[in-house]
Each structure stands twice: as structure tokens, then as C-alpha cells.
Length: 133
Image 1 (cartoon, helix red, strand yellow):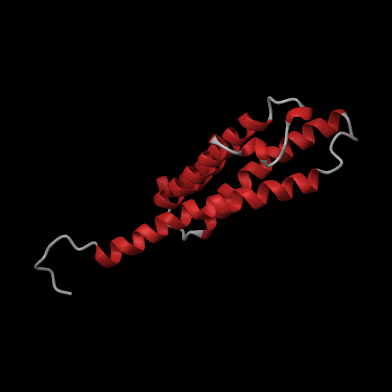
Image 2 (cartoon, helix red, strand yellow; image 1 turned 180 degrees about the vertical axis):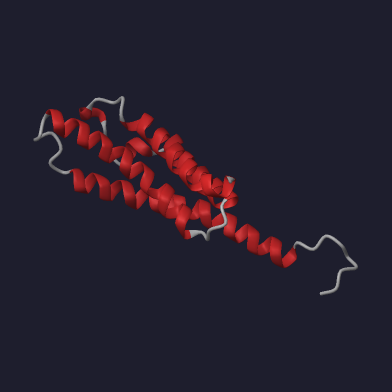
């Protein structure tokens, strides 16, 4: 059961933390990708790490699912604000691109770190000295 919930939980957690960094700020104070530096990036990293650790998938699905969460948080803000004022976000594709170029490598590194650990543990993880090779 936890294997199926690992990716959705990682997405929701990264989405919420990234949204909390972006949504309360006035539009004039949002500066992407600088707004997401700090705790939102740590949330993306640990969400990808834990999603990879508790799921049976490889490193790529958690990296993609968690890496897209901050983009969806930024896009949710764009949708809400453009519904109120259609001319407020003329450069939203650039904002999504800048967000993605920052969050995907962070999510990939968190997910790949677990894969690296599992590979090392599988190769060197024998606990009994008398085990056959």
C-alpha cells in the first residue's frame, strides 16, 4: 500500500510547500526562481528522496513526479491571477521554464541518491562474514 502512495504523497508535499512559498506573496515580489530557493527546494529534494525510498519504481518516476510539483504550484497561481486579470502574466512560460530548470535537477538528485545507496548496499551490504560470495 505504501508503495502506491509514495509518489502521490511526494507530489502533494512538494506542491504544498512550493505553493506556500509562492502563493502568499504579491505579484510584484515574486521573482522566479529566487522565490523557490531555500525550504521549497529542500522539500522537493526530500520528497523525491522519500518517494524513491518507499516506492518500487526506478529513480526517474519520482524525479519527474516530484519535479513537476513546483511547476504546478506556479501554474496554479498563474491560472488564478489570469482569471482575474488576463494581462497579468504575459511571461508565464518563461516562469515555468525557470522553475523547471531548477526543480528537476534537485528532484533527480534526491531520487538518484536513494538509487545510489541501494546499489552500494546491494553490492557491499553483506552482514555475515561467513556468507558465500
